[in-house]
Image (cartoon, rainbow over all chains, first blue to last red; front, side, top):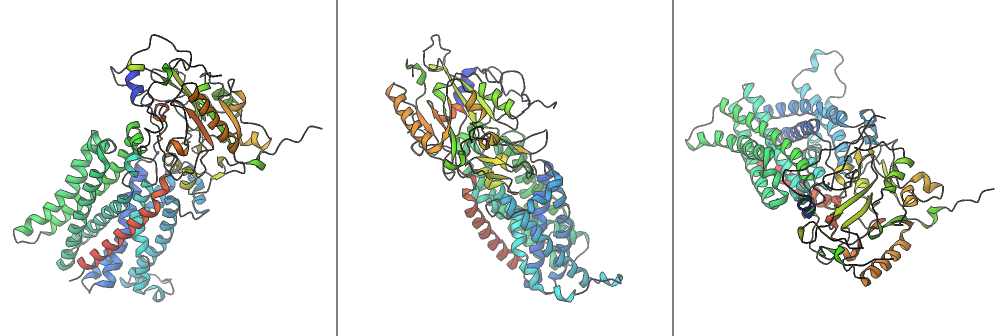
Length: 354
Length: 271
C-alpha cells in the first residue's frame, strides 16, 4: 500500500504556538468536511428544477384553463430532462459506484439521504407517467406502431397531483440533508434550510419553464402568469436568505461574508441571481409597460445562474465552515461550559496523582 | 484444552475510560492500533508546533494522541510542574455513541451497533456515500483514498469476539486507557474525578457526562474521557448534539413551505 495520509499545516505567518492553542487545537478542524463537490452541486441544482417543474406543471394542469396547457407541457418535459442526469450524478459521486443498489437495501426515515433516495425513485415514476401522458397529448406516440398500451389509464390529472408532494420533497429535502450534519453553517438554522432550497428550486423551475416558453414563442398570457410566479418566488427567496444570514451570527456566518464564497454570495447569488432579474421585470412594469420577451428570457437566465451559484456557495461555504474550529465550537456551546470549570491552567497545581 | 474465553457480550456494553491525567504521550496505543488493524502509516512530520504527528482521527488513524501545550498567562513557561508538566495529552478515539449520529445518517445500513455495544462500519455494505463523515460531531469517520469507503475504529471487533481487550488498551503502559464494562467504568471515572479534585485538580471532569453538559440526543458515550481543562483545548466540542435531532421539525418546516408555495403557484397560475 503506497498511500500516506498527508495534510497541509494550517499556519499563518507570525503566529506563535501559544496563539494557536489558545483558540483551538493548533487550528485543526474538530470535524470532517464532506467530499461533495461539483457532482453534488449539479445534482442539487437539477433535482430542484426537476421537482418543482413537475409541481408547477401539474398544478397548472388542475387549477388553470387552456392557457396553462403550454406551461404544463413545458414543465413536464423540463422535469424529465433535468431528472435524467440526477441518478447518474449521484452514483458517480459514491466512493464505490458499483454498490449504488445498497442505497435501496433499507428505508430509513431518520436518514435524509435514505429518504431522498426513495423520493427520487418514487418521483421518477410520477415524472415518467406525466411525460408519457404528455407525449400522448402531443400525439408523439402515433408515429410508433408499438404505442404503450393503457395510456388512457394513466391520463387522469389526479395521478399527476399525487406526485406533487414528491416533487416538493425532491426540491426541499436537500436542505434537510445538509442540516442533519455537524457542519455549523448548515445546521445552525436547520429549520430554514428546507424552505430555502425549496424557494430557490421554485424560482429556478419557473425560470426554466419561462425560458423554454420565451424561446418557443408561446402566448403572452402564459408568460404573464409565470412572470408573476417568478417574482413572488424570488422575493420569498430573498427574504429567506436575509433571515438565514442574520440568524447565523458573526462566527458561523463568516463564509457567507468573507472570502471568495462571501463575494459570490453577495454579487452572484443575491445580485445576479435575485436583484437583477427582479429589476429587469419590475422596471418596465413601473413604466406601465409589459416586459418584452427578450427581457424575460434574460431575467430567467440570470435566475438560473443565481440558483446554481446558490448551490455552489452553500456546499463550498459548508466546507469552509467545517474547517473553522471556532464555528464548530460556537455551535456546540450552550452555556454550561462554565460549570464544567473554566479552569485555564490546571497544570500550575503541583500535584502528583498516584 | 484451553479455557473458554469470557464472552464479553454477556455484560455488554463494553467501553473505554481514557484518563488523560495519566497519559504520557508515548503513542503506544497509536502503534498498537496500526499494527493490529494493518493500517498504513501517516505523514511523517509534526503538526503545527506540537509533538503530534497524526493530527486528527481519520480513515487510517483510529487512535490519535493530542499534545496540548499549556501557556500559563500566555507565555512560554520557565518552570515545569511535576503534574502534567505543561502539557495536556489525550489519546482520542471514536466515542462509540449510544445513539450514533453516523449510524443515523448512513443510508445503506452499513453502520451498526454490535452485540458488544460498539459502533462498527460493515465494509461489505458501505458504498462510500460519505454522509457519515460530516454527520459526526467529533470528526471521526473518514473516506479512505485506498478503497473509497468510510473507516473508523472498530473497537477491535475481532479481539472482542475472542474475549480480548482492544489493542490500544492492551498496549497502554500507564493504564490511561482502561477497558471494561461501561457501568463499571462510569463508577471508576466518578471515583477518579473525586480523587483528582481532592488532590487539587479542581477542573477534572468526565467528558460527555450529564454534569458536564451531556451529549444532547446522542444518549451518552461508551468511550469516556477524564479531562482537566475545557474540552475545546483537546479539540472536542463542549456540548455535542445529535445533528438528526432537528430532522423532524425540518421536514415540518419544509412541509409548511411546500403548502405555502403550492398556494402561491395556484394563485399565480390563474387568470
